[in-house]
Image (cartoon, rainbow, N blue to C red; front, side):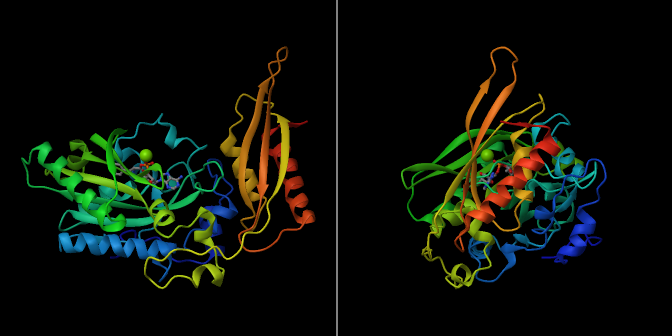
Length: 374
Ligand code: FA5
Ligand code: MG
């Protein structure tokens, strides 16, 4: 695999990330916390669970088809054209809004999915069958299974011209069912119809695991105009799967923040195989509530979550949950109450440091979002 965006340095230090990603200009909403994740490349770190899963999936595909090409080090900095326009995502689509996407400028963003590479790779790939893995960035809420950075793997396969859609559908489903079986053994799975602007028809695959249906991937038959825009004529399928989702289940990793741990008690448990994670300790949690009048129609909880993430230098917040919301009957003002659960995966927190962070969040929410504390 190689870097097709030759102009962009990879694996750069966080100081140069900062200069490249945080410009202070209008439209730029990348934060220090997010910039520090760029170049960490957890999926390339030997023995890391995300690397192990990636290797396992690649090996599975390469035994099916030696012609699958693999790409793992494409820069997460992409053009909005590649991330959205090339995929027929309309300008008004919610995923493009600055409340959901990290923009470097109005025309460059941190990829929100590995599909951002579909069009370029369709042009560059020789075999027209490829897998592409990388870190993806989404402004999102805060809890045990959501993190603003996670990892996806994209798969694309083109067929001979004139191949019937039903043949492509069949191949897509068989391929992904085979992969799921390889990873999870005999599990129950189901296909649901889904919607993506870039595939038609589209499906998501769910597996039944620990008494729950778990969404593992989105997929579909690639929209013909994406292929013709890339200068090609053959039809094909594409899928995008979430590596953390699979890894949390396979390694029994209970909290998505753990993937970012630099603690040997975490990293030292893995040797490249699939083993059950043994929690090294559970430190106590501490809750704090925060209530405020949102003060504006434009209040967005993703903006609030972003402020929270910027007030911490370590992952010491497990979740921020809206526990109460009401509208004042006369003034129509909206009040929100968020419950913060503070807990480190790695050490005990002191009340003083929790209070310090909590106070900082209050101050910044007032300054930056114009909320009125209650
Ligand atoms: C997409 O990102 C599409 N690009 C997938 C795709 C590719 C469809 C090619 C068709 C063709 P979606 O947002 O549903 O779709 O994410 C795909 C997968 O990423 C999900 O099934 C899930 O496994 C994982 N995922 C999505 N959001 C999160 C999250 N916040 N945390 C962890 N994993 C996530
Ligand atoms: Mg989905």
